[in-house]
Image 1 (tube, rainbow, N blue to C red):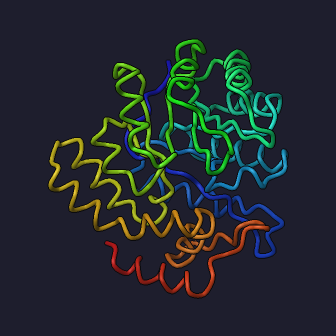
Image 2: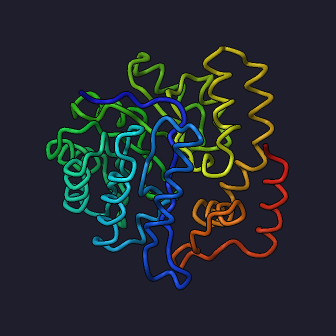
Amino acid sequence: MSKTFHGIIGYTITPFSADGEQLDLDALGRSIDRLIDGGVHAIAPLGSTGEGAYLSDLEWQQVAAFSLRHIAGRVPTIVSVSDLTTAGAIRRARFAQEHGADAVMVLPAAYWKLTEAEIFEHYRAIGASIKLPIMLYNNPATSGTDMSVELILRIVREVENVTMVKESTGDIQRMHKLQLLGEGKVPFYNGCNPLALEAFVAGASGWCTAAPNLIPTLNQQLYQAVQANDLNAAKAVFYRQLPLLEFILKGGLPATIKAGLGMTGLPVGEPRRPVFALDTAGQARLQQLLKQMP
C-alpha cells in the first residue's frame, strides 16, 4: 500500500570529507536522525540539497541505500532519481524501489531543450518501469525545463503512478491553477521556501524543504497552525522564519544548509566543487539569523 505524503518533507544533505572527495555516511546518518527527531513527516534524499547531480553513479547508490536503510521506515521516503537520460533515471528509480523507497521524485533535467512530447515520454517510461508513486517535480531554475500546468495534468492523467506534483517556480498562481484545472484532485507540494505560507493557504499538501535541518520547530509550528486553520498564528510563525528561508534560497541550498549544520554541532563538509562553501560574510549573516531562531 502506498504511503501518503503530507506536511514537512525534509531534504537531506550529502556530507563529504574535508577535501570533498569521500562520502561521510556517519554524518549523513546523524543528519537523518536530526530531521526525524525534529518531527519531519517524510524525508527526501538526493535532491538539490543532497547534491545528487554531483555524485557518481556509485556514490548515488551508496547514499540512496544508506539513507533508506538508516531511515528504516521511521518516516516515509521519497528519493530523487533525476538524471539527464531516461535510462539513467529508470536505473535509479528501480534501485530506489529495490531498496525500499516509498516513492520517487523526477525532475526532467536536460541539456537540450525538451519538447512536451519528450517530457511526457520521459515520465511515461519511468512510470512503466516501477510500481512506486512518482512525484513530478517542476523547477526550471535548476533543470532548464518548465512544464506548463496543462502538461503536468496530462502526465498525471495518463501516467498512472505519477500521483503528486512538486511546484518550485516561485509562482503561486501555478499552484492555484493546479487546484483549479485539476479540480482539487492532484496533491501538490511547495518547493519554494518563501512561498510556504501562501502555498499552504492555496491547498498544498506539504512543503518540501531543507529548512528542517536548521529550524525544525518553526517549520512544524507553521504546519500545525495551518492544520488548525489559525491563520494569525501561521502568519506570525512564518514571518519569524522568513528571513532565514530567503537567505537559504539566495545563498544556495548545499552551501547554506551545510554551513548551518556545522554551526549547530554537526560538521558535514563543504559542497562539492564547482559549488563554493558559504563565504565569510555569508557565514556571519547565517550565524546572526540562527541566533534569532528558537
